[in-house]
Structure formats: structure tokens, C-alpha cells
Length: 374
Ligand code: FAD
Image (cartoon, rainbow, N blue to C red):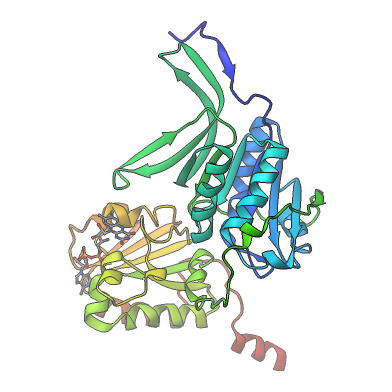
């Protein structure tokens, strides 16, 4: 029916994909490297380039790493006044770059800062932002009322209606802006041989950009960041807080770590809301999105909002005393039983070499020592 409708390229000369490389100190945060995967894939489909913006103090050396992870060009804005993230000057720098480079798409990690910065920039450059995306594609949009096919649109896809539906959001203004949930995309493997261009920019900043100043920065303990790189995540539900303060969940993680497996523990929202566990360990729609090789759900019911944060896991092992618990419908392996009986047995099995079928683990400190002295 749409045959014969005119195809309208609405970009009006805007080209290329822009991403923000958020840094802590001089190190890129994982979400900034993750966003380079969809940026690269979109750029390849659109036959265009990825330009990343790196703002901070002493960050020049990080540019190579950004190129190794998929950028074609890095704009480095190195200024001691910008050592710590501040929304006003960062938004000014970005708006200046958007006006001069005219990208068709701009992507940000949906970190605390990314969620603040992206809409601030959007309001300055008169664009819109789709927040918290889990998929990013390009495609055509059939605008029935106007009998027109708009292309090429950024299809910003995000869960909605309590994760029960996926909404695809498009807009016909450039830059088309989106933030992506941390953990939703796996970073591309670093390729140190990749070549790219590094540009330096001296931004035009006004005194008003510094009307807020940072007196002190206190970074939280980084334990829960390991959830994004863990091979095994053991997550406890509310009962694990109630019955043993997560001791058994943590003991399984400890013994896996002792065997050299990168492991972390997480929690359901009920366990967090009840105050047993800090929010930084929550998995799910309003927590972290993770994709470990093995996800062990211990006394977790399997609510749709929880599944939203772990359904990309390699294999799911569920332990629940209720055989009708929904988590079993989403598990590759199920154990029906009281976790207080099952977990001690599992801990023993791991001690004697069972590693959930994972390939050769990293050698433990003790094993390295033995090998060295042998
Ligand atoms: P429960 O639902 O109480 O389930 C406990 C499970 O443990 C049951 O299946 C029970 O059979 C089993 N059990 C009990 N005792 C034992 C035992 N001794 N041994 C073995 N099994 C046992 N939830 C999230 O997890 N993450 C989110 O990000 C999230 N976001 C949300 C956002 C919104 C807008 C809303 C409305 C809800 C959200 N939720 C989220 C909450 C979600 O709907 C569920 O309420 C929550 O996931 C349930 O947590 P739970 O499985 O620990 O607890």
C-alpha cells in the first residue's frame, strides 16, 4: 500500500554519530565503551562515522582506547576546569560540537550523569531524547497521514508498560538522541590496531557555565560495578535477606572467586526495598541490566521486572521451593528446594571443582604460588 509513497531523507545534511565518553578521573566508565557497539553498528549501516567526545583533565591518552573500542574520531576537550563532570559546561561543550559537526545521531550511556546531560543538551539544540534504550536500530518510518516514508530513522527501542512491551520511538529532527541502559550492550573487544583521528578542542565557556562548583567528590565503593563484568552472578530474593542476611548467596560467590571465576552477587528489588541490600546491587527494570554467562537466581520469584535485567544471561539456574514459581519458565536448569539446603551442597560442589561448565578459569593466587614454587 505504501508503494509509490515518496521517501524523504529528513536529515537535512546532518551526518555521523556522536557519543559521549564519560570518565571517572581519566578512565572511561563501562557504559561509555558499551555505547560504542550500537554506535559502530549504526554507523556501518548508515555508511558514516562515529565521533566520540572526551571531556576532562589529562584525558588525552584515553582517546586511543576509545578508538580501539570502535570510534573513528575522538574530540578531546582537555581543561582542568572540566576535570569533574558538571552539567552546565559539559552541555555547553556538547552543544557547540553538535552545532559545528551536525551529527544525525547522538548517544549517551544512561548513567546518572548521562541521564542528566542528554536532555540538557537536547533542550539547547532543540532535539528530543529517548531514555533508557535497550536496542538501537535504523529503519524507515511510514508516515501514513502524510503518505510519506521518512528515512533513515533512528529506531530507539525501550521497554515500556512495566517491561511487558517494547516501544520503538522515532523523531524526524537531528540529532536524534538516545541514552542506553548500562549493561544493555556488550562493548566491542578492544582492537589496538584500529586507526582513528584525534582532534583537540578549546571550548568557548562563559563564567555562567561555572555558576555551580564542586567542593568535594566522594566516590562510593565500587563493589557492585563488578556485576557488569562477572561471569557468574548469584542473585538472592527477599527470603535470602530475611532468613540468613544473604550469607549463603555470598558464600557461593566467595568460593567461586576463590576458584578464579569472576563472580558477584545481586538482589531482587524486594530484598533492596526491605533494606537487606543496597540499591546498587539490584537487578532488573529499575536496577542493573546484566548479562553474565551464568545467572543463579536464589529464592527469586521471577517477576517480569526482574527478568528485564537478566534475560540476556547465558544460562539461568533457578533455585526455588515453589515448583510453580515463574522463574522456572525462564530457567535453563531448575532446582526445587529450600535454598538453605541447596546452596551449602552447591558450595561444596564448587570447592571440589564444579564451575557451572565454564571454561578454564583464571588461576587463583594459591595456584599461581604453587606453580611458581613447583
Ligand atoms: P518474592 O516475590 O517475595 O518471591 C520470593 C520467592 O522466593 C518466591 O518465589 C518463593 O517461592 C521463594 N522462596 C521463599 N522461601 C524460599 C526458600 N527458603 N528457598 C527457596 N525459595 C524460597 N523487581 C526486581 O527484582 N528488580 C527490579 O528492578 C524491579 N523493578 C520494578 C519496577 C516496577 C515499576 C515494579 C512495579 C516492580 C518492580 N520490581 C522489581 C518488583 C517485582 O515486581 C517483584 O515484586 C520482585 O522482583 C519480587 O522479588 P522477590 O522474587 O525477591 O520476592
